[in-house]
Image (tube, rainbow, N blue to C red; front, side, top):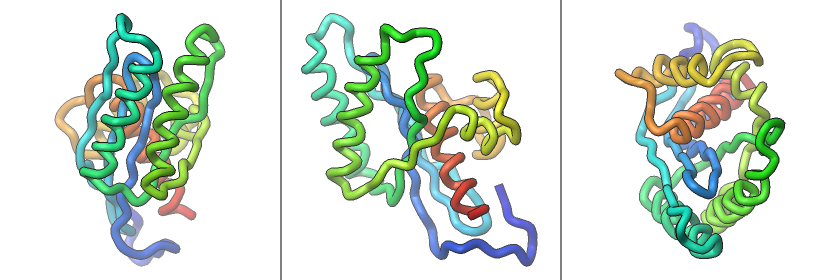
Length: 172
């Protein structure tokens, strides 16, 4: 994503955003940097927990591992998709709990969470609020100049949230 020659933005310097896609089994994260001229991919990953472990241990594992990611990469901002459970309401509580420990780790680092609806993320990444998961992931690949769609899907979704955040800051 680039601004046209002569365009300006209301922010200065390089900013580092961590996007997060919360889940109890798998929490994706993706890191980008951006300035007034471009968005640059840094890295991505996924924190996975085993279904055979007690929920409290899984949540603590997510928290500890994510804290390590935050300390390693020192993001300046964070972005997360709002919870949306139209089809799978039974997963709402575990995902909300995972989201809670991720938000706690972000708060511990002094970061607030910018939340975006799925439609806002799709609009920022694709250019329209209606798109399927594959379209969003492929556009993330294109925007970030990657050879392949980031894997696993949770990490690609996290990168989409980060791109959305950057796009909204750039365009004010």
